[in-house]
Structures are given as C-alpha cells and as structure tokens.
Length: 214
Ligand code: ADP
Ligand code: ADP
Ligand code: ZN
Image 1: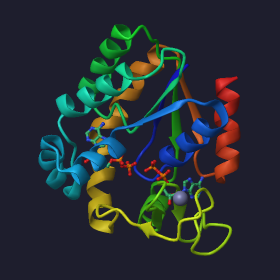
Image 2: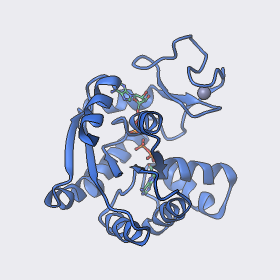
Image 3: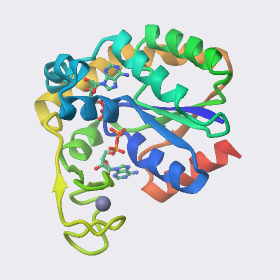
Image 4: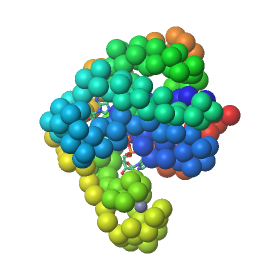
C-alpha cells in the first residue's frame, strides 16, 4: 500500500503519518523531515535548501524527488509508503509516478486532509516537537499527558521549527494554493482521491483514514 497525504501546512499530515506508522507498520517519507535533517547535517542539499525553507518557498523538484527516490530504494518491498509533503508540484507528481514504477510500486490512495484555512496559522504557530524522537505536539490542541514530558520517549527537551512563524506560514499557504492544490484533479481523474475532515480531532481523523485504507 502506497499513499499520499495531501493538505496545506498544518493540516495534520505529520501527525497522521506517525499514527499510520504505529498502527500499520508503514514508512513515513516526509521531504520536510529529510530536508531538515540535511540542513542540520550541513550537507550540500541542506546548505542549498535552508534559505528557501526559511522563506517558506519550495525547494527544487530535482532535490526533493531525488530524496524520495533514494529513500524508496532503501525501503523493503513489502513495506507501504506514506508520502507526506510530497509531491507538491505537477512536476513532482510526474516524477513520483516514474519513481514508483521504477521500484515496482503503485499509488493506491491520495488522502486529502480538508481543513479550514483560518485554523492553520494557529495550528502552525502552536506546533512543537520532541527534540529527541520528533513526536508532534501543539500548545493547546495536543499536549503531552504529563506536562513537559514526551509521551513517546520521556524526553523533556522540545523544539520549534524556525519556519513556523506567521509570516512564513502565509507564503507556505500561498505556495500550496498556487502549486500543490492544482495537482489534485489529475489524481481525481484516476479515481484515487478521498477527502477526510481534517478539522475533526486527531483520533477521529485517524479513524477516517483507516476506513479509507480498509
Ligand atoms: P508542512 O508540513 O508544515 O507543510 P514540511 O515539513 O512539509 O512543512 O516542509 C517544510 C519546508 O520544506 C517547505 O516549506 C519547503 O520549503 C520544503 N519542502 C518540503 N517538502 C517539499 C517538496 N516536496 N517540494 C519542495 N519543497 C519542499
Ligand atoms: P502538517 O504535517 O500537515 O504540517 P502537523 O501534523 O505537523 O501538520 O500538525 C500541525 C499542528 O497541528 C501540530 O502542532 C499538531 O499537533 C496539530 N494537529 C494535528 N492534527 C490536529 C487535529 N486534528 N486537531 C488539532 N490539532 C491538530
Ligand atoms: Zn519524544
């Protein structure tokens, strides 16, 4: 099973991917996470991507598609892939088709997380994560059971993304509207798109996604 989680920044793609990994043993392939790892390691890709990411603009199609190709090559054939934050442009969509074919995989579902745009700024400015394991939290909507302690790994260190500020969020939302949303009709024509209500609470969204996966 190979699926795309599609939705604007803050829609819940990372949160739902983590749930799918846990419940179904799938692998999350997040180009955002891969790029942040490259920035941290100061690789050539990271050095090139950093300023673009800080501005909320899109990194080049070639860079992100190569990251996806490399990560998919390393993935066990029996393990399903969740594409989180990729593809984001028409060119990336075409590159993904070629990459999947090369690795003998097919795209089963595109799940669109439908969210109210007004909620996104609050979701993103309230987002933080565990500095040790990356578990995602939110200042009000999704706090650890024990304040200041990660539910997953027990760490007490948390971090925020430099691009999770109100100004950058506006650019990221505009990039989504202009470049990413237009790739949906092509998937609709293939009959593989399902919309889920991303405004529901996290467990309810997970339930809707599981219903799609069957
Ligand atoms: P969010 O989950 O909030 O939408 P991501 O973690 O997916 O954010 O992406 C963070 C940043 O990384 C993006 O704003 C963009 O600069 C870059 N990025 C991530 N994925 C892609 C992609 N598929 N194409 C181009 N740029 C990307
Ligand atoms: P994306 O990967 O699409 O950018 P995230 O999964 O990182 O989105 O979620 C953005 C923020 O919103 C996080 O702080 C997360 O804890 C919170 N969040 C995710 N899903 C929901 C939800 N269904 N209801 C309320 N808050 C949510
Ligand atoms: Zn943790």
